Length: 174
Image (tube, rainbow, N blue to C red):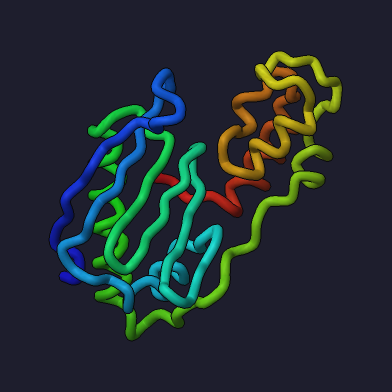
């Protein structure tokens, strides 16, 4: 087992005290720098930095960055959600480490969803039913992992299925 534990700190953005979300920094008890390219290969990071090693994932509107000595997670509901994600990451990190001889490390970011491809699948009516001012804004948010097909009420069942299939190629589930 590579990652055994952490100490977490939950904060609210000082510049936005009214914010409904919190952020988490988990200081790791072990240095996990060596596993980061393997974790990137397994989970397909949104961004990857070789030196110092780090990988960032986008999922469900959250940014999750894994560094050699800490993990940062934004846009959390509460400390309980942070703990759930940290436990999931611990399993993924330890599993990637245990299977490193079977995995080719990846030093590149995974492909990203394209806003224009998402926009093609949307109704392009700018109806605002999703809460966004335009379909373009919705598409940009979907490309970042903050919106999904289920958030566009104007989509036909067939278009919803196509958009869900397209987005599922880029995002992992926690």
